[in-house]
Image (tube, rainbow, N blue to C red; front, side, top):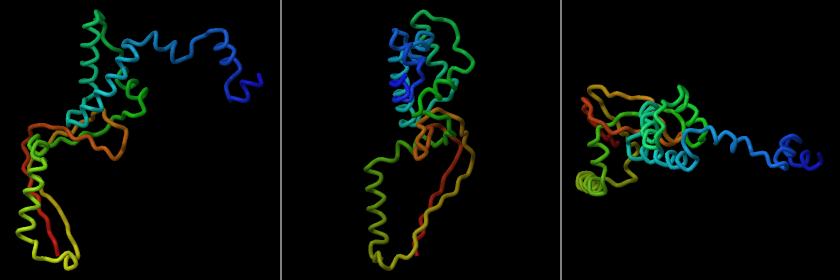
Length: 178
């Protein structure tokens, strides 16, 4: 009892572990549909897909896991709450709103394009001294619409889920300096 109290663990948990009882996580793992290593691989893949602009919806994740299970000979559908619980099990994941962007915007953001922009900017405005610039503002106007949707991605609030896609939108960006 002293050891349990010292470690802040219930006495029943400590005595169960000493008598060879598996931990709660180990007991739950036996009832999971995919193995722990498969789940870890799936977690890394979901985060990678988000970083590439292809964050998955709950239904897409479900379809991927059911395809994996089918390859293993398990043809039963996943439970109703499987994807929600998968996200809850992994603190590095959350469900968030994915903002759809035209694929050309992703593909057009290259070192060559950035250098081209700064070359033009230098040629047009290089004569203005930085100390004479008091305010710079950037804005944009969007014409059309996009289809934003809930996706699974990183729980880091700084990481926004951007989705590549074809859209019927036109953007006009402008930069103003005074």
